[in-house]
Length: 135
Ligand SMILES: [Zn+2]
Image (tube, rainbow, N blue to C red; front, side, top):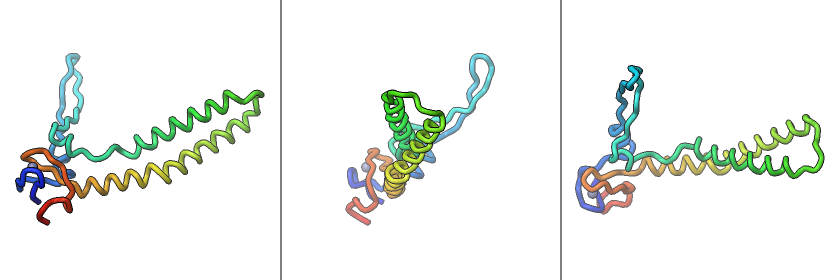
């Protein structure tokens, strides 16, 4: 694959560049404890995959929670516990619905695009395999 920016042939699939740039090392803290730290090189960060579906879902959950809290607050009279539970069940189903409808296809689309993405090792330019001058 040729880079459309600098015509270099030293290009790599983003997927591979990201995997190669990721490294796990064991570090020792001042108190003697050890832990594994995953570091991603600056180059690999450029080739990083799209944000995970968990992030997308998290946003929808927070939004639903805020809406429900507002609704709960605005109710003049306190209702029974059963009603509150039913309300929460409705919120959960609403979140799942929105998640399936919006977040999941969005993520898969972004991820599919990313898997077809290349990165140039010479200039760091990222591009799609069908965007280059030569196939
Ligand atoms: Zn390039």
